[in-house]
Length: 369
Ligand code: SAH
Ligand code: SF4
Image (cartoon, rainbow, N blue to C red; front, side):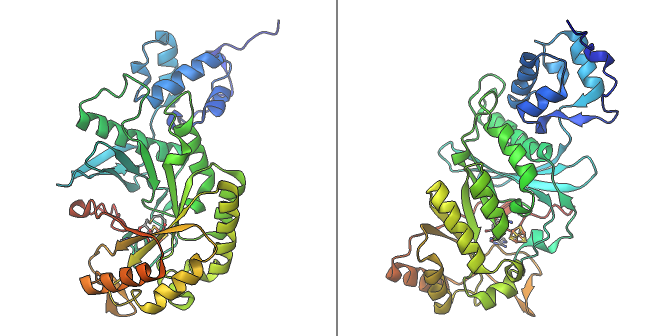
């Protein structure tokens, strides 16, 4: 029998604390070797059920708990502020271990269904002209732990609101995830994938990937990668307009990711996943609510299975486009746009505007203070 290195004598243990919340089970098992696999499973499952420290894991021997606490932390980040809107939306400001701040939002539909809106980057390098996050300096991409922790913090918030004990059962009080917070998820796909592996693992939270929607500004290579290598999540494209020339001015990412490439990538995704893609259209008054935009949208949607999601622009103070202040679409502009969609038989929904009271609606996430 080969000698087994006692857990405590392992020379290669990292000196810096590692954050365990972000480790998918196979990685965690490896990290904790030579602890037996069932121990890794116990720890993984307890973290998924809300344990914030090793001290809470009373099923582990005391000596192991303190040994783990010396070498690892469960979380890397913490909730630094909590804002609640009258409509039930809760925005959390989270401070990361390097002092960067991000925001995450808990949305509820009033019927007990909660959706977590997660961030993938601190700031965003894509810089769409209508988005507050894009106007911030881009700091960095988040690691898996920082993404998973947002979900765990929101879940705790939801459980507290519902008066349930989240550590009691495996069921989740948050049933859906939209990756629509700060940042461009497909520029951080590797870490997002690890985070999704944690959140969907059957030994833990067991959320179905079908209940996760990833929203992208249109990173063609990322869409292809997602289609080819999974996970099988839902996809939303922030189209804004399919008029190439206008889109290049509103979303500079279009210059390096032309719409033809995005379409080709979406076709690969739809072939593989066979699921409807959401086209998010932020409506900017007087800018992209023209007949021309609907015509371009119709051409873009041709051959794809899509549903359009209309999002009247949420105002962000001081934002302008080519010298003119951005504004919300007027009622008439909105009706004109939806009228044309209906005439052309393009299916659409209108996004409920939740969280505006706390700056927690789409495009309002900033975490500057
Ligand atoms: N970066 C990703 C996901 C985060 S943005 C993406 O762009 O898809 C999430 C959504 O908010 C996008 O559809 C974006 O177009 C929209 N959005 C950005 N700023 C907005 C604003 N001020 N009002 C309404 N929606 C906005
Ligand atoms: Fe980034 Fe999305 Fe905002 Fe564009 S809309 S700046 S991609 S977060």
